[in-house]
Length: 287
Image 1 (tube, rainbow, N blue to C red):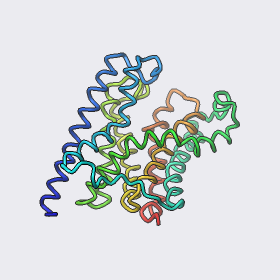
Image 2: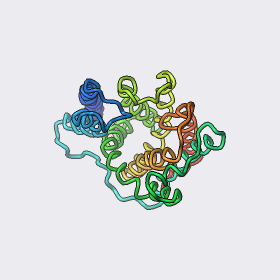
Image 3: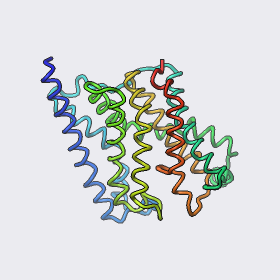
Image 4: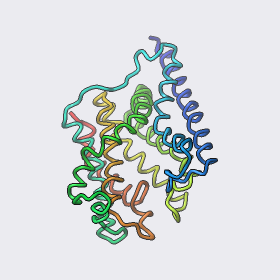
């Protein structure tokens, strides 16, 4: 295929991806907001509003498929990425977020910036905290894999593979991370409960953006090196499970803890940054 034609096609598909993503996300959020959605009380919102906000997880995949179809060849050649990889590679993908969340929350607990409350898990589940940790970080990632699939077919199997054709892996990771962060900005700006009460937007969004870009580096490198989406899904799902099923569940909120822990918290972001840097030889060369 002519190189000029290939680059033109890629640009066309990337433009279509961005446009369709906006068309899917903004009206759905507007509808959810009009129905009084508050993320702190999602279960109280009308079913339509709940569906509108949860459907955001699948918008990148729908946008990616629409963009690929714009190439005029159907879905032929779409790199879904469902290739087998060694268990070692999946282990690398799993360990990065586990170490990062442990560092972030551990430092908050030790310094008193957040209160360690493992009894919360026992009260809510009846499980010993150690058992809850194991279950949360192993079978607990399964539901998050499904949600991650909705996003990562778009970010990883489409955007990453398209960008990597003409850019270095690091440049691709930076762009994907910024796009991933930007995807969440409308929700953070307009949906009540998306940002903890008392946390200013000018603090929350930059912290979340840094965290997104940080995690994008191992995600993109693993996708490019292995040509598989599985390590990407494991990393993304484990990050969410570690945040919500484990560390968040074992933390008693204080007045200032949202500044430091949680999705976009300063110590959470710093812990993930340290973990990503410390493991860079592993995810750059997963084997």
